Image (tube, rainbow, N blue to C red; front, side, top):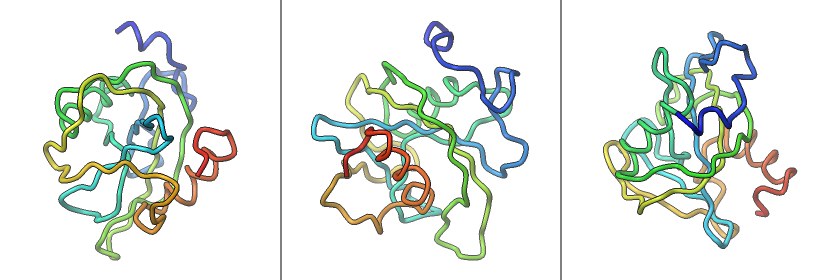
Length: 159
């Protein structure tokens, strides 16, 4: 895959694969922004009522790009990620509406654009463009506590 060659190798190791054996959940996420700087987020139909980034769990043997392609097709319909840039790795505890469920989470985040019109598909029931005037309480703790401060510091988001 041509765009795979343009992205950095896994910073955790040099294997080319992306699973962190220390995390219970290994995911790849995509940060998509509109012209106003709002971020595209998803609301799932189970597990959490909070908004999450498009993307999902890396399956055994998958690269980041294979995972992202599969998850975007499952969640957003016939779209393709374009102009991808590596953002970073974020770790925390996955949010679940059931407080008895706690799993460690690592998200490998990319920034890019979508080709095609995203529509809620599969387990996604709603897509939201989230911005400056929206309630941070609707976001997962890993987004608010880990990602957002870093994205602000680096000038990727301004809200």
